Length: 304
Length: 232
Image 1 (tube, one colour):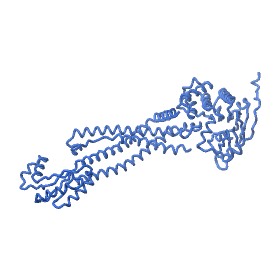
Image 2: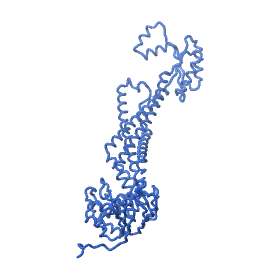
Image 3: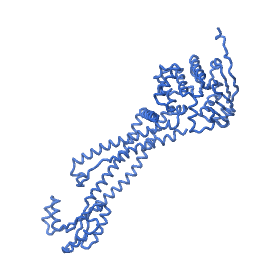
Image 4: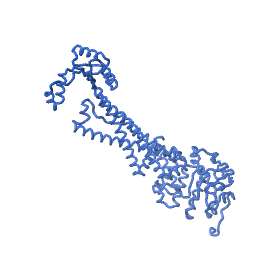
């Protein structure tokens, strides 16, 4: 009985969609575009967060030492730093090692090093961090503490870049939320209008059905299913398009690997598509929006 | 079965479309409601189908006071009451069979069962061969027969018809009246609004006459008047 009713409602909803193909294609298209933007934001946000997490996994603090420190003080500093919570391996890089590394990492300007009268690079202590102590806030707190230690001139952990990057992610999150909300409202409005058009197209039929004893539930359900289907198909279409876009960009990045985020990160980070969980929620969100859009129209229309 | 007590109804303030209507139609009765155009026949039927509400008075149908019926309970009343409209109100984008099956689907019957019963009823009204046609592909008389089949398919206890022969020739009108009489013999209470004088003369049944919104006469069945042409 229930199955029969469900199939009746679904057939009615599909008939209504078939009856207004143009309007429905436009609606599904608009839903898809909205969800592409929304899904794109989620994917971008997720990837940037992963990139940040990847960086955090490999974070190191470089504590530059003041010139002329005796070996005993350097040793003392190393011991002191090693005893701090969250600090892993600690290694000393002397001035000579520093200039050699510089020349190795920048072969194009390695020749300049030979022309220098004096080694301008300071000696430093490189600090690796234990797992669980690599988040930006903890690193920042440790760096602040290190900077106050006698004998340490400056501390570097990519803070400027990291601060900007964190700020960018926060801004992206906020703009994504605002844009997402706007798109959801727009989508609801569009679905609601499409359903209203379908309602007007079937006004006579609904009036007759009502006089023949149809309940509001019986008349409303096909329209709710129609909205739900529009939302589902729109969201699904957006996911297919997003995947195509993702594949395209990944291929582009791979072909230009010297400029890619992948190579810049030089870690284990790989751009990822939306997780299965997110895909599931986007589809549910599409259906819920469709349902809500229909509900808004029906509430007004069938009150008579 | 149908009881109206001192019912008044107006579309505009101060102008009564129906005034102090009181009537009692018993179970299994066949009544014709007549009167000139604008007398209030359609409005009276609309009150009985709850398309309009009375300003005051009581309307009891099947023991249910429908004058103040809740919107959420309307469907129960409408499922007990078959309706035939003057313009048939068949859905043009659905086949004759689907039109007749619709009330059963509304009642939750499966599509298969609804279509099976609808087909049987179409056979009763002689239109089973046109089951797959669309309403605009059949004649006006046939459309009304389909509308009657649709009204009867849910086995209502009451059938209300508003000018069911209004647009039909005498042969088709006669056919429609015969169908309604057959339904009446199957214990359906029938109220037909009509100003078709020929039908009124030929069919012996209760005759209610409205004039300017008032019930001016209520005549019980008489023997049909036989005209000179019909003799011999």
